[in-house]
Image 1: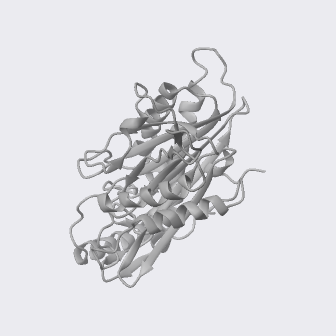
Image 2 (image 1 turned 60 degrees about the vertical axis):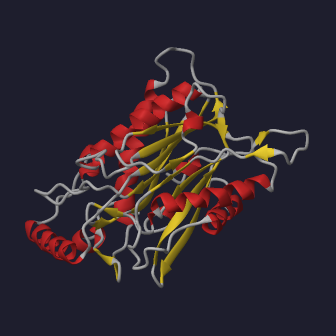
Image 3 (image 1 turned 120 degrees about the vertical axis):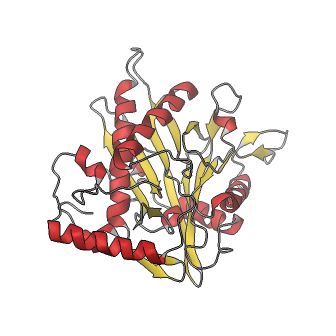
Length: 345
């Protein structure tokens, strides 16, 4: 049984740690690989990225596998969350062996952050090692194949998508070959996710049927968004983050290609995309449970699926978000403005 989430890739687990209220509106999300790690790579396209250990994922470098990926709020400050995840992994002997003792390990934990500083009202309320550890513990305690909580949780707690409340979304597919591909996204882009002429989500235009909102509903929504934008502080930095994963046996170079083409999924759901005030970053993981066909074009179906799933995960993130209204600002949700669609989850 599948749950239509990243955790359909066997061995991957997801944990969120969320802080909201009393000046907080942020969090951390951890994607935990199977013990021994997963082949990992990354592609960074935004003009303002905040990352950690991404150079290690270059196919030219020695590290092949990552034990976990950390997605976090708090801008560059929030990258401290990765140290809590590293400590949790090290206590379990998970990482690159660097000494004679089994405890002599260095966990490979790449991380990337979104900008959400001050959205809860307190600029200093941001994730650190404690929140990273909590997210790792949540991932480790989760049941294999468990559904992934979506919306305003983990790294998506303070996310904003072009003036609307953003969040976390996830999706998966089993290809005809039997290979599973999944994606998890933190949707916090500077660009819009809504088509201005109609109110439809850009990402849904690529998914078949589209229910266009009534003109009166769309006009009322635009007024609400304009009023909220006038009250909020001018936006500074944003960023969309994603993890795309498969159970196929990919090389590190193939994983990097998957991360790169998955950015197309962001471009379908967000306009404009990859701006100077975005830090758009996509990680790719491959567990290697299923062999990849040796045909030179066998990777193509995985590449296409990765991009499609990122688009769908962004739609799910925006659909699952709930409005936020507090000392840090006011961000209506898409569901609040336009109502629930057919097939909403």
